[in-house]
Length: 136
Image (cartoon, rainbow, N blue to C red; front, side, top):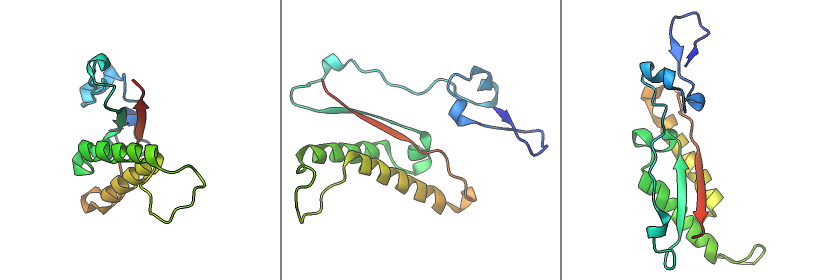
């Protein structure tokens, strides 16, 4: 929590510093991130590919994008990147987005959805995505 500099006796919320900020619990802050733990040994690594996707709430909260939409978009990009021709290969076909391009598209779409909401008066939450393909 940081004091606002406008002289009003209120506090602003600095989300980039909220993880581990247990003192902020009195103001409604959740200092522990929501996580899921999976035992990767239980997955069928021979017939499937896996990825980890971590996003900030600005991408998926308040109906911006669904976690399923994000996962599907990134999975399609990873699948397509594995089958795309090598760099420099000539092709007239429109290729699917690479994973970095798919992430950029998701961020832009969420940003546009924030901007289109008239109730937010120009406010936009932070929007981040990190994706890693797992080699099991």
